[in-house]
Image (cartoon, rainbow, N blue to C red; front, side, top):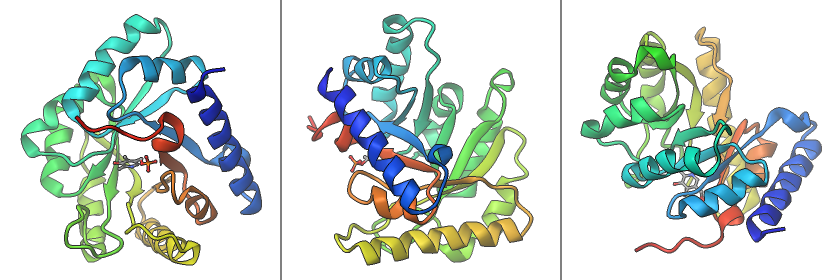
Amino acid sequence: MSSIAQNLQHVQQQIAAAAERAGRPAGAVQLLAVSKTFGPQAVLEAVRAGQRAFGENYLQEALEKIAALPLLAPDVPLQWHFIGPIQSNKTRPIAEHFDWVHSVDRLKIAQRLSEQRPAALGALNVCLQVNISGEDSKSGLDPAELPAVAAQVAQLPGLKLRGLMAIPAPSEDVTQQRAAFAAVRSLLAQLQAQGLALDTLSMGMSADLDAAVAEGASIVRIGSAIFGARHYA
Ligand SMILES: *Cc1c(COP(=O)(O)O)cnc(C)c1O
């Protein structure tokens, strides 16, 4: 078995164990394999091990993989999720080539994605990214802005608003990790109480996966625990 296949199996076991401890059904947490900086061959190895959903941060690199994989793995339908910062002049290729966008952090980006989404592809699934730790340097909506922005995004015809995404400030303290994820969960509940039909909490990475699953993550975004350490050119 390749190391990527082994890592995937290990991460799946870790998710299942965390879900069980939390009394959540095994299938409640989807694994998004974050393949940024790794080439098409690494993605192919993950596909051969059964992985179907991939997360990417850098548009150009992602588009190359999205074009390459159907040739390497014909007839295997894959799901591509954009999870990186979005520049407003780059929305069109995102709207045209991805199934999900987790990192919508302002209304203008949502409006452009909605307008540019080809009708034939159906609505683009989106999450609003929330700046849960209040870090100045981090992208994401201020929690106070969320109710109004979510209400407007939910009306856009080319999008299906699914929920929230967050990247809390890194902490090695599980209690702190859980507190940040619990805050995201409660923001989602607040939006649901406002009448929005949302089903997604995109939270948890390699270092804080257990805490995220304990607090209700429905998608965990895992990179290095599957593909190894990233090397930036
Ligand atoms: C890189 C990245 C991940 C994966 O991080 P790991 O620590 O390698 O698991 C998850 N989410 C986002 C938004 C990322 O940019």
